[in-house]
Length: 322
Image 1 (cartoon, rainbow, N blue to C red):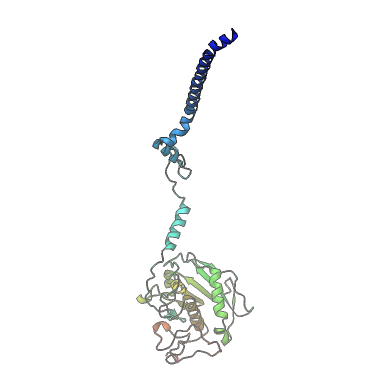
Image 2 (cartoon, helix red, strand yellow):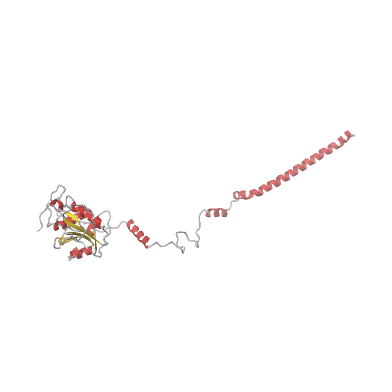
């Protein structure tokens, strides 16, 4: 009986097993589909930007890297009204000064002129504007008041007391001017070779006063009347040597040398008159022009020279001018 039942139930079991297998496969497929669907839903936000690029999102990301200033929120550099701040007066003046210095000015050639000298108002060392690597500002007029240089010159304890004064607003440092004039007076090519000595003072005890003055003030102190001398001359009047600021700063076109050398000619020529020296003329072609020669009138074959003596101590003489 048992054998007959096994024979009858065998095919049924096989069919049932096959059905169960099919059901398990179907359930597994459904489960896998559900899992894939769940995973796909989670991956969509990650995959979509790659599969379907969004230009709008890219543009918004690009803008986020740079701050955008709103008109209602001015930048820290702006004024309270949202506009750029105006500079202070000091800033404006500094800026104008920098702009002016950035441009190399065209330097016009100044007309040649004569200096006046001697106890009267004769012609002196000469004038005119020279050339230089830079051209300082030269005011044409000033207040007529002067600042006295402090004691800056070291030298002998005795000698002719001198002081140096610079007109207010001239743009020349009085202490620096005193150092330069002291160096000229003490140079071995200067009047010290003739036994003259000088010591700097600051008070009224000065027997010789060097005044660096604007052209207008120089004309007044030197009583300039001749039309072609106005604004152009140096002079010695009494105990004062008046040096035209224009000549001090620019030199002379007739003098073959820089302004600093021409200053030596002005000082030496006028001090020579103070020491009683008269005018000389050219001793011969190619020779140094005497410091007492009115070189502004022409060199007459001589070469420019600012010193009364040469480096060997020889006096640079020439024929006297009647």
